[in-house]
Length: 244
Ligand SMILES: C[S@@+](CC[C@H](N)C(=O)[O-])C[C@H]1O[C@@H](n2cnc3c(N)ncnc32)[C@H](O)[C@@H]1O
Image 1: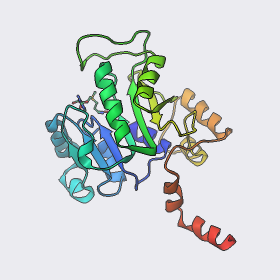
Image 2 (image 1 turned 180 degrees about the horizontal axis):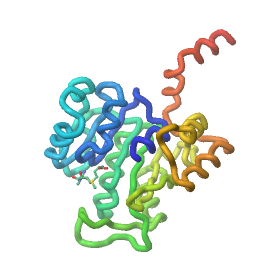
Image 3 (image 1 turned 90 degrees about the vertical axis):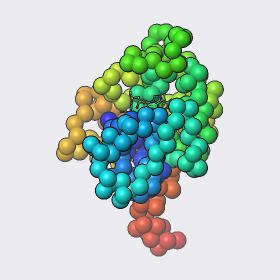
Image 4 (image 1 turned 30 degrees about the horizontal axis):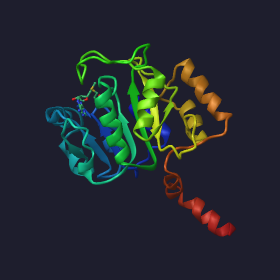
């Protein structure tokens, strides 16, 4: 699911990616082989989870080949990598955090985003806004109303766009972007939408299929860093040069 969401949003091998609360590499086991070396970054307070992920999921050879980078802290300190990221993901993290911790995560993410970055995160939408005593609620989940969640994202200096993407845990996917980003809906390159619909090995539920079909007949706002597409299609540059 995370791989599909991120690649549908435009993640390509040359992008820099940050996985917040990467755990035992549920997303990393697909993202690390897909991305070029030194592009995957994971933050995870429980170092042993990453160790087990490497040992039991991806293996040391892949680590040697792709050099993923990891940091371990509880503070959502995302600065230790010393760079900005094109794509960020926080899957099943903000479904466990109180308001202060959610704000800390969103503000830290903002600090390491540029104006075309996309931060894909999940939260649990509900009728109430969590105001309990625990900062990290686990194994349970916390809920927030959409307007409230959107407000927290805005307070962190970002714009929240709710995505129509099924989640097996009934969580809601939100893409947060720079407010100057003029996208108002989720943003699929039409080529990606038709490729996904025709994919031989991936099947989608009726809801997602009709959403993808709807996208095919709309005009698009692609949030992904535009340079990536051009860099990946050198023959387009040649054609453009020829035409000029
Ligand atoms: C429900 S798991 C999700 C893991 C992973 N994102 C996935 O999709 O499998 C929540 C993860 O958040 C991590 N976590 C807890 N507190 C955190 C914090 N302050 N900063 C970053 N991650 C945290 C936990 O250790 C755990 O790995």
